[in-house]
Image (tube, rainbow, N blue to C red; front, side, top):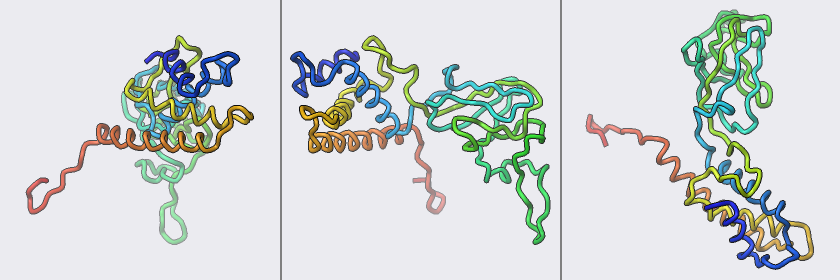
Amino acid sequence: MKIQDLIDLFRKQVADVEKPRLWDDVEVLQYLVDAQDMYVRLTGGITDGSSVAITQVAVVTGVPFSKHSPYILRIRSGRLLTARRMVKMASEADLSHVGVVQNSSLLDYGFIKPPYLDDTDTGEVVAAVLGVEKNSIRWYKVPVADDICQLNVFRLPFPRIKDELSCLEIDEQHHMSLLYWMKHRAYSKEDGETYDKTLADSNEAKFRNYCERAKQEEERQRYKPRVVQYGGIPF
């Protein structure tokens, strides 16, 4: 469905076809952009491992951090293109599990102290530490060679919708559901002619219920079922 068609249908459903409009064109387009973003957030994100603008980040010699797109919701995996090897994804607390213990030392009770992030600790990049800074990857170790890291991610829609000539990225069978969130936003507008809490809440509930069902469908497609064996017989 084209964006203009969806906007026209929205106006018919909220009885806003006559001028002057209750909601102007800029507002309605913003509601649609927000609806698609919210759908994607609630269903887990759009899978992507090839869009250069989103999924490739530069690894620069001597620079501990690399920025990534704010439209990335979650990073699944990464691979260095020049070095031709995978990079492990970790949190700072997980560094003891990435298989590198060069910076480890024994504590008083015989336990191993996990690796820590030190900007003077340079070497081969073996891990991408997530969550240290917003929209950034902290490399472990600090790179000694330039490279490109190809990420596999869950992301928000990109490129962004700019006008009625842009395209929606989610599958067409879900376009009609966006009307629920658009009406939620429209009826939440603080204006005597448009504000209606009951309609805003009911449309939000319908939208969230739809997204939950869509998420379950997508998860069934993304993840293969595990095979459970009883007495050597797979089920």
